[in-house]
Length: 399
Image (cartoon, rainbow, N blue to C red):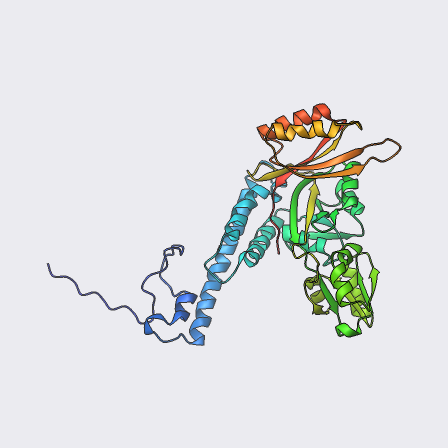
């Protein structure tokens, strides 16, 4: 039988799509293929690229709405739809997906932002989420809250850490977010103190890389005062001493307040985030001035949610033991005997005349795991007071 002569292919059309591309009902030009000019083909015209962008945008709108509809269905099929709005286990799949090295121009930070807003927007259709945070806007706590809940949440700025806990405790907010530890300055005392006072749980964490910038509306040589919160000034102490010896350091309640002062006061500068500089129309006159390049703050998400195991969790506990020799060593032996990794320990003095300390511990594993349950049972035998503050997925620092 004679072979049929194959029909010639249209010029400048890719002959096959990459193996990694998703299936589609009909072949179409990809933006990458249109602009490659491979095989000696001529470059596409601007009009052709515009037409391809319009086609891709139409497909994206359909896929975004389909993804939102599936998120709604996932929530509605949950035994408790309202609680399913906070779903670390469901988020794990897309967070792992965007963290893998990609084949396109966008990296994990950009992809995470897209998915975060998409998922948060869909969840808002069930019910809006109110989040109390240590304000004002564009403080680092506010930025951490946006990282976790997306811009669709209703953010409630408050003036101190105790007020964050009170908002959640009185059900005026669904969640709160507050700093608990910094890699340069250590523990955040006000946060630990509130866990001894109110019965709230840690249901998640955000680790945020903290990059401080010197912001102003004048030249660096004209700066006479530098404003920021005490922790930010502390984290930049060496740089400021070396590079700004002429400037007086002034402590204020937040980095955002510092940025407002730098905007309004001649000769003033602020140590604050890049986002605060954008918000208050300030120039970055020196970037990344933190003394520790690995400066990270860990923020605790507080609420009354109990999270399911993800396979990569940590558990926080509050422990009080008898104030006597060897008591702490005996209690901590439970971790070694059960092969559980203790990742964080902080002491906090008891209030009132009673001598002694309470200890805050983090260990790897979920409180529902067999090994964790056995460890907690042994701790209970040594404890005057033992409270599981919560189990939640471990996080990685975000830029």
